Length: 124
Image (cartoon, rainbow, N blue to C red; front, side, top):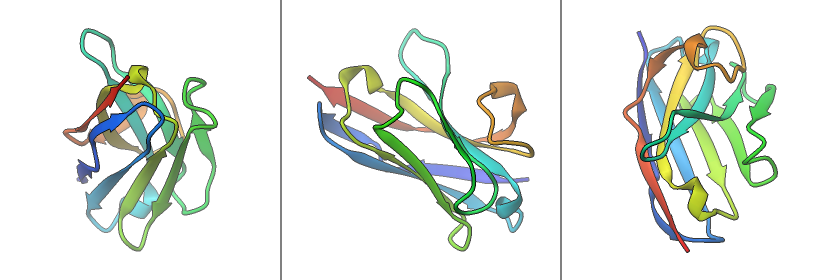
């Protein structure tokens, strides 16, 4: 079993940046692909980005964040990061990380363990 804890959310003005972190417990973290999802009030959960199990591996991004967000991981620290630049009000949501045995994948149903999320608010 893997436990995930996100941090780094907060309030930022449009055009600003935030870096989210997802710290995992368990020695098997390096064998899982990891993804970030977000859910805005009244909307369904949405895929943001994912990275394969190994550091420097393949990445996948939602079209809405390509060129602005960057996902990376440090398996020594059991941590995956989401660097978010040029933030827009429509990026406001609760951001959650999750791990999957396959990937990187954009499909919610591929993910086995989820964190509780960290809130990001972008003001205009």
